[in-house]
Image (tube, rainbow, N blue to C red):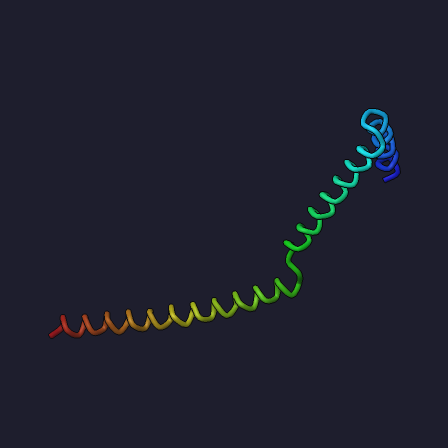
Length: 90
């Protein structure tokens, strides 16, 4: 961390000599603001524990509904197969 601060000061000094204090300061403020906004956007995109628990709950409900419909379709298939077998035996 100390090395980064030292490098930042050196960079600021070099830019100040070449571009002037106002321009160097404006560049550093721009970079700081851009970095801060980027970090804020990343934080907003992260899921919280509440988000994950809600997804887990919703997924659990979806799976239960899916299993229910698969069972209903399976019963229908068995019934249709039995009906076809009964018709063919006659």
